[in-house]
Image (cartoon, rainbow, N blue to C red; front, side, top):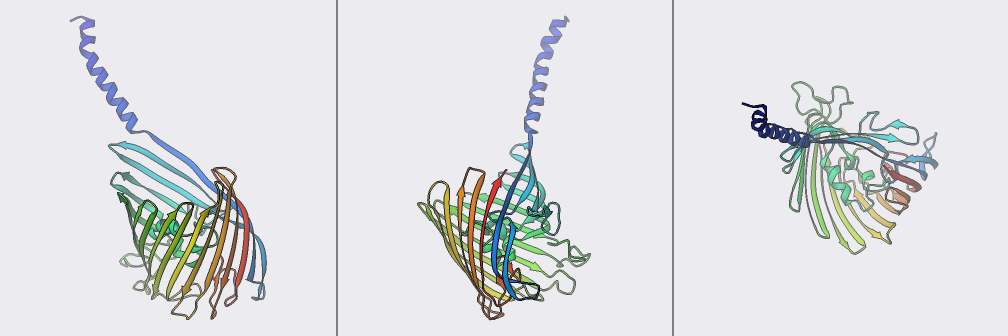
Length: 362
């Protein structure tokens, strides 16, 4: 047989192998993205404790007025047939001091790896809990430094050692999380051999969003972080809704909290929280928002009232100027400050604050 005949016979096989190779290369396409947010502002507070513990005024630089400063890496690899490998490594930064946040963790905001497909995403690592993922869309102030996240730390909860599934079906979005120990910085506080409840966290959420209307319900359960307290429970249940009419968007929400864990000065035993607010896009670059948050701490007879308003002006798609104004009225010794419970406020004192700053996305 001539060389030409051999080549003629081998040509289809060669082309087939080449196509398979190219197909495999296309399926293996991957990318890694570096991203982040830089945000800093100047804040003035009243009612802050001085060296003697008395209420005083405070002027300071603050990190993360609109969005917490962060830097991260996220990647995806196409595995073919709609299946993808994904990961995210994201660390929080105090931009005013150049320090890591979230207890000094390098990637304290998020650190996970997993798989995604048209059936949803399954991920493993340190992750936002469903109460964080879903509630952020129902805060009239969009999780700025003043607002919903300061009324309950679990609105920005994260869980170490967690597995999370999230997906959607038409207008329905859902998510579930299980953690074998939500805080690994506590000595013997999670993943203790033979003690499966220590530091355990379970969360689930469902949302309906179609057209101008959206609503969600989310549940979160955390057990105690020691062998002695593992049977204790801290439970959260929140429900909220939004509706948009033209340039305006209205918000309403409710959160129930019940805890049988040992209490400290920043923990509530039983409480009900209600909030409402309005966001209004005045023009292309300018957005105004205002909100009211009222909490009935039934276990302590305290009813703090939290009022806040924000203004944001877009200089470009990536850079914006902002200002925020907040006021908290404390009652019967409650210690809610504009930056959270037991933080920069004298118990029982009211607090007023104002902040101005700049945020840049990259």
